[in-house]
Image (tube, rainbow, N blue to C red; front, side, top):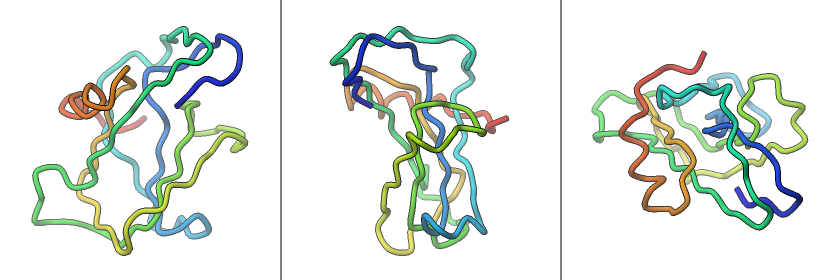
Length: 124
């Protein structure tokens, strides 16, 4: 997420839907998230880039579900987002999902990947 506008506030994690496609949410699932206070907002300066990482198959689980092809992501971490800032990210064809884990925002890609280990809580 890059803030290209004025300084703003942002929650600690993005909101992610894992779906078959942008038009087929029949098997929609959600990743586990870190146990963080989602009401706390971070101040994001103009021009700042934050990273978040997701692991679709942590630990290369033997039990997986679905053939997913899309992540719908919004910087606004609420299930009732307006949709105006939702970005669709295409996944490699027929990606499996097994207890996907989403990390909190971080200042570098390496830190974002490191945050994944704390994702142990189902999204509310």
